Amino acid sequence: MTVRIVRLGTPRTAHEGLRIGTVRRPPRGVPAARFASEDWYDVWYPDLAPSPEVVKLGQQANTERDWAVFARKYRAEMAEPHASRTLALLAALSQTADFSVGCYCESEARCHRSVLRELFAERGARME
Image (tube, rainbow, N blue to C red):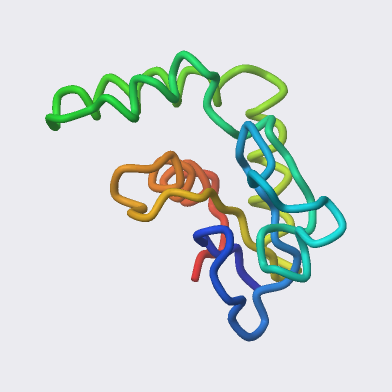
């Protein structure tokens, strides 16, 4: 059993399980009834997405230093009690269930998914 970090909207892999969208907004132009069938997500959970202000920092990050500022601020948001409890819960669930979390960004290296991967690993999640 594992948690997988995925790009939303890409074909699902075998044993991926429930797909959780950790994004601020649903995909544009896609009716809600098609989110799951078109491989976006099964459950929308924006609580693990960066705030709009922090998203802007990530989108404007052109240097490693800029990216580090984004990552630090996003980590601070994820350290808030609600988000921290959610991360702990999902890390524990990864021991007994397959599921995935994701975002739309093309490159994980410059996406909050990369920080989520680290946060799950730090909490002992079983990762693919």
